[in-house]
Length: 256
Image (cartoon, rainbow, N blue to C red; front, top):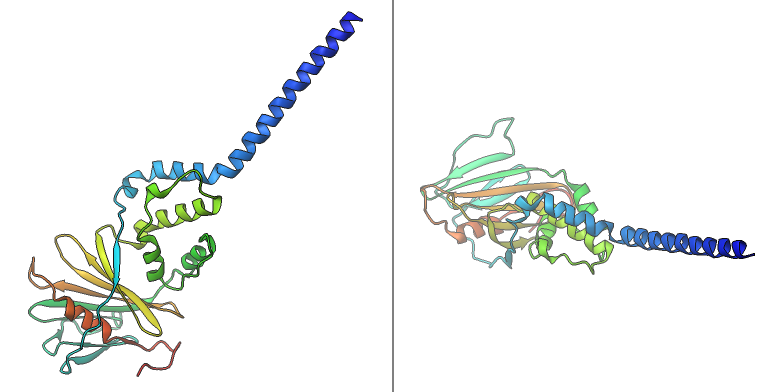
């Protein structure tokens, strides 16, 4: 009887231990299942540390509206029409290969205008799915603006899995969609397109305007560079070129 009672006690203790281990494993598995995106972010943060350290907040403001001089001359590149100061001349004639890229200059500024098709609809679709509130992103400019105030150290363990997934996505994408040396930007939009004038720090002291049609993948860039090294660019000339733009993409009737 004593031996049988002892065996039962041992069996009960073993069962209790096994039950405790199973419960502990279930809890650990549940925690891992919930926190695996958090752990994945921490691993990615460690691996991408050299790139992430350069990420900083960027300020954006609406572009001030200016009066475009009446003597400016109309030009076109691809489906884009715009006006330039009358003393600007074409540097290179457009060839069949570069039919959507043209360069102009005068004594102070060089302007290169490009137009192409943007091949990142999947990125915008993924961003719309991953955003915590499922915000819709129609253009790269919208995604850039969303990333401006997000920093790697915004992560915290109390985030939901969806919040961590969005944080990981946008921080990982940030070095790709926002150049490292952009210090600020100005936003401007029309009925069928929108874009950002990016102010870039560094030796070249250049600026460029990235725009995209809202309803189709047509996009382009206008690069503004000083002719002389260290020369300051006239920001109102850049704003005038941008605000004179018209895009004939077929998504909307021609602007009047």
